[in-house]
Image (cartoon, rainbow, N blue to C red):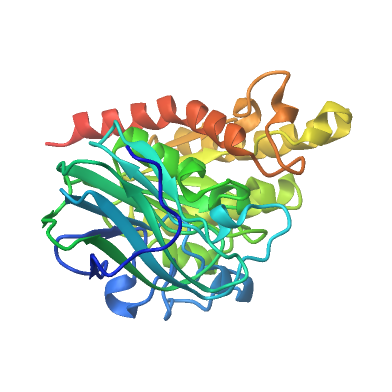
Length: 358
């Protein structure tokens, strides 16, 4: 691949909208009815908490996929607001990044670098010397809304639908799930897992506001064609008691529409403060125990499509404190380790699902 040209795009591009037939757009389950890049419905069955309603306009987990022989690809982007975070790069908050290659073997090639004070930008994400048919994947910004995005290809390039994927995994959780503080969108752990497992992943992480509210569960339960729900909202809960109260209600709401869909409950990874505070580590373990007990109770009553994963080891061993930006939110290394820990568990669940199909 040639070096990325971040100086802007030119008139040689032909521009395409993500809803054109050859492009695959995923991550926005209500796009067809609401016509905006949003992660929750505009008209939910129950009113959403105000903060969740606002954060739903952040585009974490959105993807555009296509197949083309274009030598170059650019993007024109209009954001809902400028980059404004103190502990997260603008490339992660407001940028698109891009991967090239077949399913299961995609490779990172570029991220949009732009004037972070602006809410519009045009950049070229990759170029190569010769024309070659390839699958191309773009990941939406993690912590900002996208009003409009267009994809630019060489005017003489051809365009086809990408290699198809089936099913989806739905992740519900906190700022860590949403992707704080990845340096670029493709490094959020749901995005890493999407590439490795070759399946669309819906990112319903809500920064500071993944609290297991039943109103949120009612909307999430509307999502169809799910291979797995991952419930990862421990970090936003005040204590073990909150988890013990909300988790059964959340599961029951999902089960009304998805009686046999697999559910994986994941407790929080450690924070850097645990290296100095035994009480902090003990509190995290109590929260994990509360979730484990809920899952054990359901399994005892016959719901075996429900599993628990202790997130205490997801950031590695004794050096877990090296994996965050601020003691809590993972760096890219932290997200990579989280994906490493989650991948074999989720892969096993998906494999079992495939065997159980008629």
